[in-house]
Length: 118
Image (cartoon, rainbow, N blue to C red):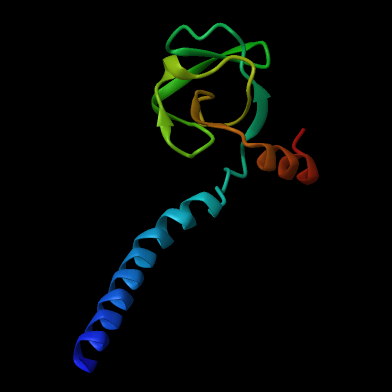
């Protein structure tokens, strides 16, 4: 009898420790902070998004070959899914083409305002 109860407790402990081990990385994803490029600029997307051009702050900018667009969850999205009227942070390469676009979260907007990137 004692052996069975010890085995049940051990099995329960094993199941709980495994489930916590699987949940920890998922929790860490939601609290992870993105690091935006230091040479970036802040802007708002417009309604003209004719590939390879993107409208930011009423200016048409060209996307660089291999440009990446990241949503608020830091997942890459295709050019056609870039929403209109959202706050973004973008970085250009030396030729002036846009290399990275980050759709900003509310926390990132506050952080950028505090850093003086209006």
